[in-house]
Image (tube, rainbow, N blue to C red; front, side):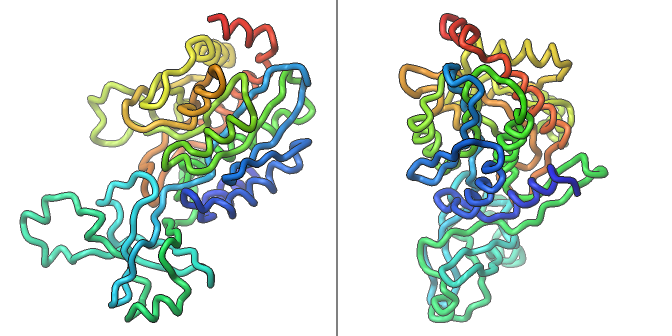
Length: 358
């Protein structure tokens, strides 16, 4: 496993649900520290590295988000089972029988998400989406007291338990938290590629917190950095699996990075969008596109900062997002890094001023 895949393995296997990202942040700092002259942090836990090309140039922000979807323990039954609420969006049918990790004050505890066995469900229950309120986490305890002895208490975070893996001779990356440790890794990779290279701006590269529960870290990071231009780095849905044959959008893993034309939180800046498309054409990178009225990215907060910050969201088509195991393409990641590096080198004062006037 080379250094790029190893970075993805390390970042994805760390547990960090929304609001509980500290361990991920520390690992991110390890990667960013050698590549920057300064590490910036907001008071919520986001981390940003500053690299200056031209001290008088535009301020360019590129950021993924540290958090992954997870849960929070909200009740312990007398029999020793945990009830929970979701942190981020889950489709509950993906949850039964999946392993999870509870982070407690006494260390990590393994759990299994349980529900009624299919043998005892009524016909009506079998044809319905399982409500989250009917699910529970089994930690092997026999009572509330045993759970408390394990160190588990209300408010503890819960995350999927899934190892990083590769397929197709390393071309495909899989595991939990690709949404959005892949964006975090991309922020690191772009900084690596800028080492020893001239760029006519100040680059702020890193990751936010609490994206999955309302783009919260994006707001505080934008206030911290005060960017002139921003790129939200995130995954998007892939449509190359059965069931999407007649779907209007085309986003296949391995066929190029993804540019969001719009989502629920943002219509991207037209001039910056066109610069991305033109640069991809120059580099012979095949961009893919999507437009959704559900969900969003940190761009939804970046672009509202100050009097407005031209922003686009760039990422990678990813299968099975918001589940225990997702799948994405390494080549899409590498091409996204090439594209972003080229864009940063173009974003001088005159180019940005023309974007403002667009």
